[in-house]
Image 1 (cartoon, chains in turn cyan, yellow):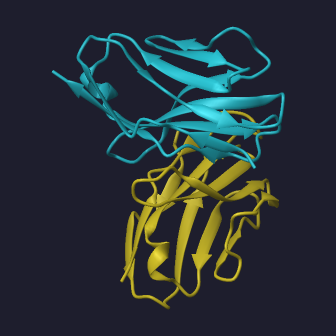
Image 2 (tube, chains in turn red, yellow):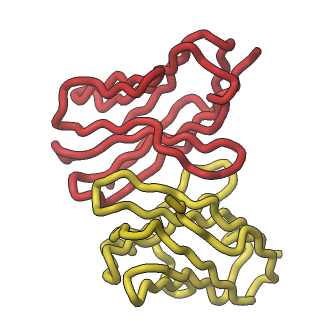
Length: 114
Length: 113
């Protein structure tokens, strides 16, 4: 079965600085999707970024970028120029190539310090 | 565009009682998901529908949980009878199709006492 691990339960970053959240996963598949979701206190889960495993190029979305290391099964999220609104729980997630077997990691709580 | 609607937002019941949650996905979205999120943990997929068919219900405790999406649009998730460990937030999400971006509702917080 696929598993997703986030080894940092909590992280903090100074406003305007850069922070990296770690994620590792385990799968025997060669094609799959990886995601980072943000969950603010309002509880509504929001997609931050998505990566298809067959693409070697790392996905980017404005201040958010990933470092996808397929051989190491690592998928870290970098947030540049951190803003107060970035404070939330961040979940790494995996799904297979058919959009099934969706698995979330345990999450990392990010605090942004003014 | 309206988002994923869930009701109720909060529910408190006694153990052994029954409860039902409702979800209305974004219009046109074929795939619908129900997740259970226990406090301090990541969401766990309970069931995934494609239109009105079940794609994955491998983690649904079928002795007490049931879900349906009869017309391939809105969906209900039922727990009967509830246990203390069912206390969690129940999240509904929908996507245009399998492997496309999923949009989440605000969830229903269930407390079983």
